[in-house]
Length: 326
Image (cartoon, rainbow, N blue to C red; front, side, top):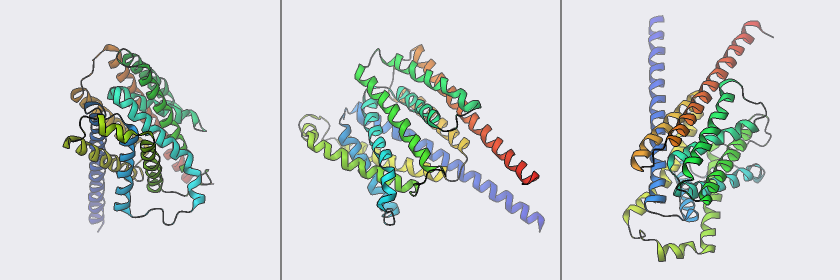
């Protein structure tokens, strides 16, 4: 009987480990493909109309959530939605500025800037991080600054302004999201799926209406050369579906996995995207850019190690509390 139980436990652990590995691999593949697809539409095809592009992406994400999960807001009240509105506005600002920046800057610069948004989350945390997490901050900032320095030779000043705005918007959004999920936050009544549903709703409602008011749809019809290309429509459709799939897989994994494992998964996906992007969209391999990438990766590794050490410390503290008692 004992042997059968041990065998069952071992089999269950192996199956759960395989499920997690498949989930991590799926996230890395989806994340990398989404970045490459967005870059293809924005740069290779030159579709530099973020109001339409991001409006379309959020519309597809909204419809996919509705088709996959139904109306997730049917039990939500207005009093639960209002506290999330600032985060919704920051989300729209982040995807708009990110689209403007990615259209003109390389994927390594974009990813390093996204990694630097972690610093804003750390600085706004009520408990300053310690250990490896704290040590990662100068590496992330240094990687972003070197990336800006390597990009300014071929980019315009406005492009750098957009990537800085993206870093600020993304960091502020992640900070509000973190606060929203803490037990101390009194208004955290929405699930992750409901929050993403609201983000997409505001995204397509505001961006597509802005595109119509500013006449961007007329400009696309008259001046965009790939409007009749099948590649353009496939790229736009895939970008929206991949964005939804990335969020779906991440939310599913994050609800069942430790934060250190999530950090490792995000690091692997970032490295994969960096390597593939430099082959698919060649950039000038300057020493400054490689130094920026090295600093960014080291910062992410220290962040992951810091999270692992925090989890180990919390686990040991919990065991100590159990052993000692009140």
